[in-house]
Image (tube, rainbow, N blue to C red; front, top):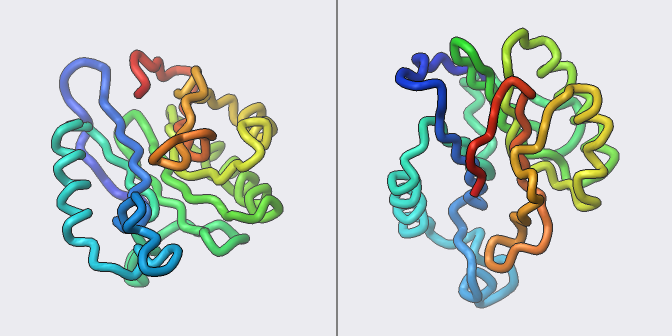
Length: 187
């Protein structure tokens, strides 16, 4: 899906927030009660308010939400050819394109999706940000060919883990960017 968004004014910087909200299901021990993963079937209004409050607190120029839903059939979205998780959202700004992705849980499907993502990002003639849940269970080495082909850099240069959210041990969520974009702070 391509969205038109007004150019960000002011100095040449922006604050980007990537937020994997897990379908607003929440976290903690109550997520798994009365049975494992039952949190996905509970009401999410309280969690949605917390998510909105957090976004307001961070006050980003652009927010990329991951694991929201699959989108509306009436909208135009990009889709990967392979995998259950196939949606790609593109936000096109005057001097930047942002791609939000949620790659498949299956390694083979992720490799096909990365090929598609290479084609999508390579067709853009301006700097890009590619962000989302890459489900790279083998770490960034699983993404080496994609990064080498695109020339994109990992904004998380210190390799801060992102999963699981309660006690992060590995990085599944990534923000990649064109070399022209300088990262001044990553949290």
